[in-house]
Length: 207
Image (cartoon, rainbow, N blue to C red; front, side, top):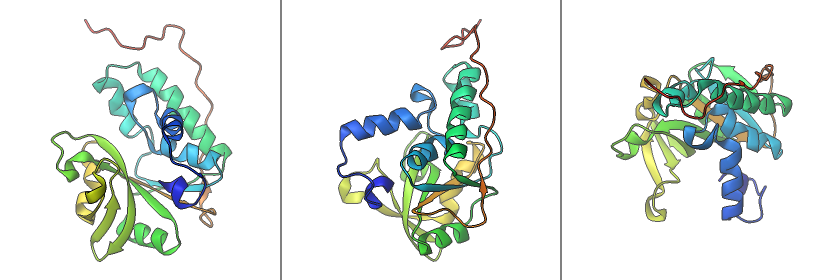
């Protein structure tokens, strides 16, 4: 949606969708973290700016236990995406994002992507999900939820509900995306890539 908004793609099709899914997902169905959603945009010439309360893997910490995956593999993919962000000058702030951050982004023609729980849309399950914020009026935000039908794909969400994710997901995060970098912001740190574990197993066998 961001690539289309900034006219960085000529056509939205399944080929592009699958390619972006492959680039953003940490490992198969383990999900998409803040670096995963930022790296493909930075690689294509846009300028993501991450505002997050997480100082480590955030939502990806829980993915290894819930899906019974080898946490070392998640760490490798998470770190690889962080390195791509660093190498392509994605910027970062470690703090809890606020309504002010969202309004400032919108006023500067930056598109805010927000990590939310599907519960705020009436889903029975508490699943991490990324949405686009398209407008703001007082404490109400207009959001585009890609899971919605086209007839209802723009809806209002209260700012207090938006960050419900902080309760279970270990982070509150927005990623604002623009045609230029945020001034005076620090570039993402580039960590060393961990070695691939020789005894790696896709699924952890429990006793």
